[in-house]
Image (cartoon, rainbow, N blue to C red; front, top):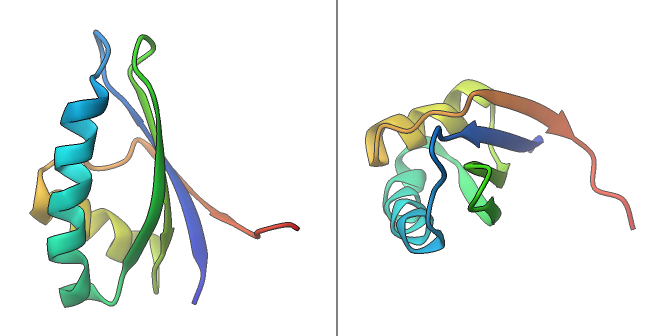
Length: 83
């Protein structure tokens, strides 16, 4: 399955606690779409969130975000994991 990194840009910043709640919502929704959210990183001050996800497509990954909490990614890239 392809691996994707998505980026969310939240004007005014974002808290790690809020992102953790959104990630939990993703985990509860992902199975309906064959998606598996793996990890996320947060730059609180800049309002940037980065999510790593196994998904059949970028659209499937964004559908999980949309249904779980409404915060779809601003950008999403197919990536290859290095060692």
